[in-house]
Each structure stands twice: as structure tokens, then as C-alpha cells.
Length: 446
Image 1 (tube, rainbow, N blue to C red):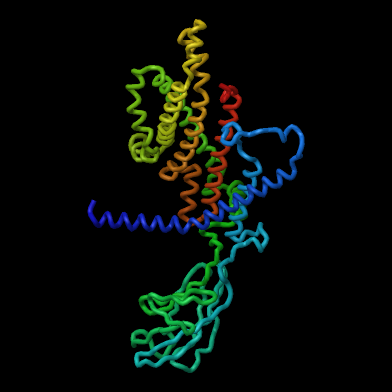
Image 2: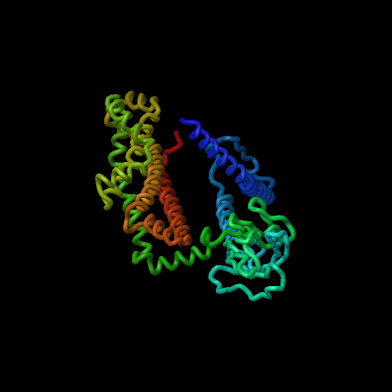
């Protein structure tokens, strides 16, 4: 690599490192909230637990995996906290006002600037600023110009936006004559030094105009992150009326159909392939390089090739999902076979079992936990892959809905789609886990 490339990589590394450092305080606060809730819940639970009885005699070994299960209270508190933080940083009407983060400034403000003419003469003028919310029809107020060299100005700025003030439009001198702004509210200002008032940041541009940027506070603009109730309203609207002439059920149903078909095809081929690799050194040697080569290749990297080979229709998307699930299921089945305890196989042989009986009675039942784990991973990968595939080429689907909404900056629809993807993915994972409990009750019992 050339020194220029190395220097650019170093600058990018430093930038990323500084960004991570800047996020550490927020991360520390979030971790502190988690620990605070954990200790608070432990205290409440301890106070409510009887001091005597058989429960008090229980002993739990620290680090015992079998004793660590998901705490329902922690899960509920976590979800509620996420929605509270979401509402606090978006000014949600679902939360009381005292829980809201400071919002963007709206209202009236003013500041003065000092004009210096070419001959060194200076004069002050006042600028009246009106900051209004998005969608409001507000114009700059009328002000008296004054009698000095610098004339008073007025300007209207939308919240979360900035606006340039052409101060010399009504002054007796202008920038072409060598006049310039040298101070704001008595503080020196330059292209490298901004002035902060109680409601805005005032900056001097390269062309000598003033850029007025009202304070944004900690709340996020709806175009970046809409409030929860705004997303819920959009969900009910699209569920009723659809989006771009397609119902929400069609978007979700088509995406789920693609995932299920692709996953089933991948499992039908991948599981027998994994068994063959786990039971035969010839199959292992033949397919292991192929599987290990394709395993780290992300499915999204195959999208251009799949489009070239199979087009942008349904077959291409199903083939992509088939490839996404195939290698995962093959490795899971191979791992399941390799993980069967040899003592169980020896015991079956000693009882006179044939190879087919050992496969059916020992290997397959003991490999099912690994296969179900692989199925959970494969379904998650397929669900993420189908959304990405629909972003590239599709007429219907959740991914298509998201990419279409992003073109119109409809962030509420994008957030709604992301939430639906997460909820459906979580539901699929829970369904597979429940199916595993029903079909593999012997998991973890030796």
C-alpha cells in the first residue's frame, strides 16, 4: 500500500476510534441503568421472599449453565425502557412532559452584530429571529431598520434547520465594498470562531454571511426518528389501506413464503449432506472444501450472480435463500453427527444393533439438538437475506416496502418495517424452540 493509502486508513481508524469514545458515555449510562434495575429488582425480590421454608435451602452454583434462564422481569423492564427512551428522545405524547429530553428551540430570539466598514467605522444592528416548527406558515417579523450604518434585520428559521442571513441587503454598505461582520453580541466572530447565543449558534460563512442554526436540544427530528405513536398510526393505516397498492398482509406473506420455501429446500439438501459428511470420510473429503469455502461467503454477495443466472423473479430469490440455508444446515448436521457420544454407539453395537438401527435410534435422535440450533440460525439468516434481496429487486415484500419508503424519507414506515422484521424473526425463533422442546425432549438430559 502507498503512504497515501496508509495515511487515509490511519485517519479513518482514528475517526472511528474517536466516535467509539464519544459513544462510551451513553453506553455507560445504559449499562448503569441495567445494573440499577437489576439491584432494585433483586432487593424487591429478596424482601418479598419468605425468610424460612424449603426455597431458602436452595443452592445455586455460580456459573452453572443449567441454572441460567431468561429473567422475565428483566425482559419486560428492558422492552419498557427501550420504549421510554424512544419516547423521551422523540417527545412522544405517550410520556409525561417531565420525561421528555430537551427539545429544539422554537419561539422568538434576537442577537446583535457589529458591522465594520472598509474605513474602519463600526455600527451595531439587531437581528430578530423567529424559529418555527415544521409545517407552520411563519414569515419574518417586520422591524424598524434604524438610522445607523447597519440596519436591523429579521429572519424566520425552521426548527432543526439553519438559514443564511444576507445582512448587507438593507445596510448602507455591503461585502463588495469591503464591509464585514466582526462581532456578534459583542463577541469576536470569524470563519473559525462561532458565537453561541442562548437560542442558536451563529457562524460566519466563507462569503461573509451569517449562518443561524437554532439549538436542536436532545430530541430527534421526526425525519430521523419518529415518535412511537407516529409509527403505530402508520402501521394501522398501512394495515387497513396498504402501501403502494399492496396490502401489508401481501408484503409480509410473500416474504415469509420465500423464506419458508428457501429454508425447507436448504434443509432437505443440507441435512442429508451433513449426515453423509459426518458418517463417511469419502463424503467428508469430497464436500468439506466446498462447504467450508461457501460458509463464510455472505448470501448478499451472491445476489448479482443469482440475478444473472435466474433473473429478478421469484426463482432467483428462492435460490438465494436456498444457498443461505444449505451450508448452515449441512454444518449443523455434520456437527450433530460428530457430537454423538461414542459410548452410546458402542452400547448399541453390543446389543446387536445394525448400522441402520444405530443411525435411526442413536445418531439421528442425538444429532437433532444441533440440527435445531442450525435451523434457528438458518432461519434468521434467511429472514435477513430475503429482506436484502427484496431491496434489490422485488415488486412486493417487506424489503420492497422499506426501500420504497426510504426514497420518500418516510422514516415512520421504515421504522415500522424494521420492527415487523424483528418481531416476525423473534416469533420464528420462538416457534423453532418450542418445536424443539416438543420433538427433542431429551435435549440436555444425557
